[in-house]
Length: 129
Ligand SMILES: [Zn+2]
Image (cartoon, rainbow, N blue to C red):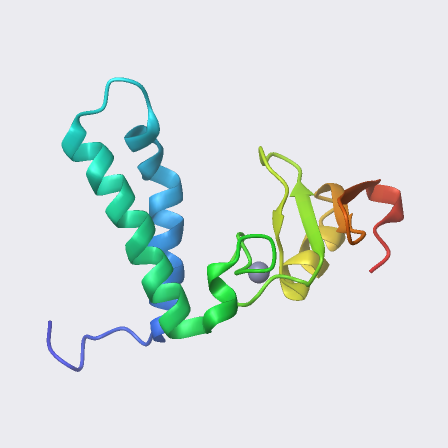
């Protein structure tokens, strides 16, 4: 690919694309019956993402609940808040931009707020952040 054909993309955007691809197709590496090589590859993939997340987003990116937004992978999630978006299986870190978009689209199932000891679940009607 020549320089002229190179798409305009930041390193963070490129890493976000890889995260999303892995989320879409990497699950089979966790299923029963995978080979030892595939299990090792999955561990390497996790370590590779962690290495690049920290390199591009800073040390905070290595923490799950206060780490990268798991929707866009472009920004850090809101501190002390996890979001369960409709159609998702888990509560995940979410940045303010994605949170506002989910609110606009009415796609918030619930949120959980860290109260210092545990995560306190709050229903969608209470999502007034
Ligand atoms: Zn986001």
